[in-house]
Image (tube, rainbow, N blue to C red; front, side, top):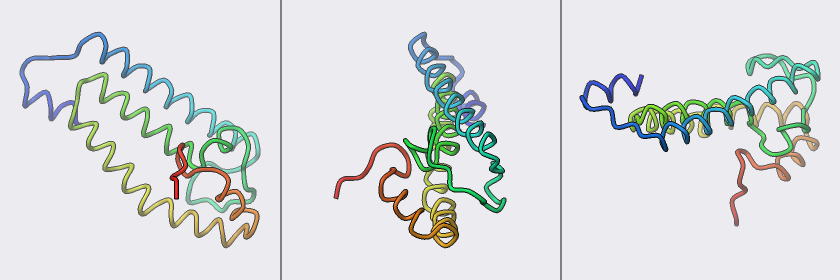
Length: 137
């Protein structure tokens, strides 16, 4: 969506080789992370639908690195596509969507998992960052 909005504003396509290559790299990392996370969930018998009841706490595979690798992978893929297309609007929209997920969706999921799995989830949450990097206190 952002690409088409940006294209209407600018007539000249300013995508260079570096932005295309960078975009492909970020997109590929995002897709690989998302596929790895979804594959891990399916392999362990967990329904990847976020609204489905969770029967097991998955803490291995990409879930050792991030508590939200599916959302992270999707955001990286969208950001990579925006970089590829030299779309500042797409990049901003991706960041807005990620901010919404971080502030509205993930806290509700974390509350559910804490209630469902108790101390096990709380220990996992304290040892694995929400996204990738842990905030310093």
